[in-house]
Length: 309
Image 1 (spheres, rainbow, N blue to C red):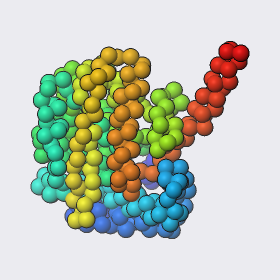
Image 2: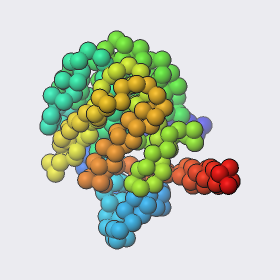
Image 3: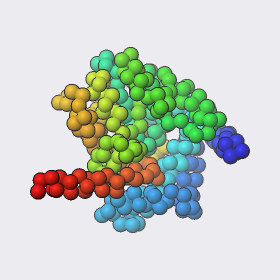
Image 4: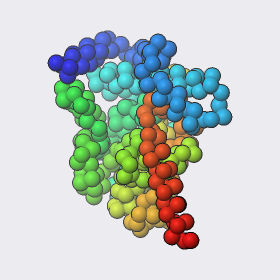
């Protein structure tokens, strides 16, 4: 019964948004996101705690302003995603502009496939449509499946309109390597917390469990990594900025090099979030395993001292 209610609500919301333009959907979504922040406690505490961890020198007022902007951005992203499935190609293209597409094109032209690494940042759901409609490039998207099967089928169908294929994370390893071997582009969103078994990388000065996939795939295949950011403009359109992660000096596939490359692309992400803090999804528990890792480091340090004494 619960899944059916969720599906009906999802389809009702989708039908309501369809009467709006993409820009109109963004404005309504931003309003609703701000309303959620002001009137409810949904994820507000997590957001403010994350911001206090990342920006300890900012005032509470400054952090609340960033949090409000992040909720508004999330509302925009969700509303525009619901609308984009029924938008014309021309309407979608009108919502984006490229700053440096040559970075992506030149990396792809090397013939080794390409890892397109992004985050839940800005209008991230425009990544697939912008890449396909503007550049005509074959993208395989690694996606997190929705728990509600009915909703997942609708979401997946919408994404497939703008991509070569979508691959559930459960089957990602095999399909990513196959896609890179076939010289395709593989899209990964690598900003969410990994498990306790993931790599731990400094992120805003604190240890964060970070997925190793992008670095491991790159080092195994020799494929370049290009990071992709959607920056919201005051006119409602998104500016697309690409930046290649340099790893020419660490081509061998070793655990040390996977760690180093993960550190490098995480540092790029942090730089963009620092520049546009209201663009990122601060509602996610990004540092939920930090205490575990710090305790593990302390135990290792104590054991090392005992063995050395």
